[in-house]
Length: 322
Length: 259
Image (tube, rainbow over all chains, first blue to last red; front, side):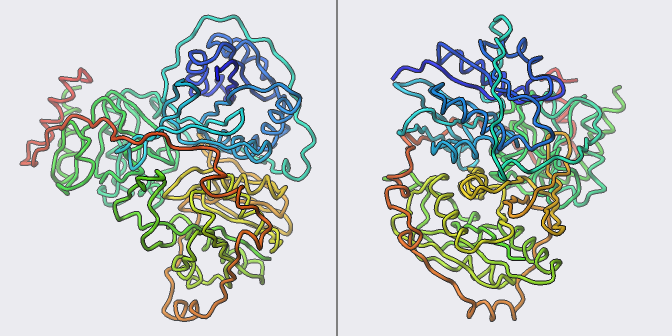
């Protein structure tokens, strides 16, 4: 079965499509002759240039959602397109909060299966997906054996985004149908947490802290080191759950996937959940007092020792250089 | 107010996980325990029922083999009763098949609210609760870090990339909660004793009017075609800190041209 057409969910942000959607457009371009994007928002049409530059020829615009959570209405808009006979071979969806909602809704609506946590897609007589399991120890290859379109939820940074230099996509309205109660969750207010320095996604250096810090008050050492290295401060799920730092810092399965040049894991044991989100880093430096901590199995440089001695000494040494 | 909390019984995550060499599905043949991620939903449900001044927390779980030990843990926390959908035909069921089973069981209860974790610890597909909501015709709010019920409305602080959104939805609705939404209680001795006599209603898929072709590995419409060891990272250098550890890090950063 040859793959002719792939749709990519181009989730809008204030600064254009979310980066993973550009990665997915790039991947889709290498797999199918026709790549089309789906987006929404008061000014979705303004994304036509960006998605076109990455290979989409058409942008289906679901329009302004009027404050609705996107999962239900966007799945509704996509299902309407499919039910009208416009049937792609696959739908690629970013593994974001809203992306996962769209995928779940769409799967139930169209009675189609969904594959999630995808880290690679290739065409081998049909699409094959790659999934990292057991903290990245093993790779699984999977495929759909039901009807098209399959729904593919793909993790960020699984592909590199490369522009194709394409013209702006043609904007086609894809209105949200009446969905009754399913489309009744509304956003009343949005809260943005302040951040200084580069974002976790983009930073060349990420410094993350874990339980080994011993308390919320010591996280400022992580922030200080990140700042000295012009990097971003991350965290393990354990200390996010403990309320030491906001969720936006979380690296791992349920948090962000990062692939910086240097990843410094400070007092992080290296639970599966964490390794999945940072194992792709080019270089990993770990400091932990437990010589058997799993983090050392992925570290290029591991220091077995007391974080509260190593970290202040490191900060002081860097400060004296600048 | 009645709250259904979907809970999953999983192999102990502390034990090494293995895939069944024949089916390539996770080996779940050993003892199963309550997924720790689900203890937050159970606690949230108990607190919401308390705040509403009445009602029950009803657990819902699905297994192929009649396992109840995880359910007993959640009953010991204070849930009133449990529904266990147990059927050999369920082995290998995918996320959508699971959602069909859970939705059919929830329809019998007609709850005001359905709670679930954002994703399970063993499978972490993370789509099942929203699929359940769609099948039930309910709204859904995922990634809740705070949940309150006000009359016939649920108010949720929902995590976002940038921070969080205040979201509200009419009931009945499906809400998925993150770890950290509430601090789960430890079952008391009294709770553990009481849980032994709490009712667990066991249903087969036939009782729910679901055909075996919709579930199990046959109904999954997706398959694993290959499993292999991932490329390992080259072994690094692990050194004991003798007061010089920070200098090793400095040298590494210099060699990587970061400083």
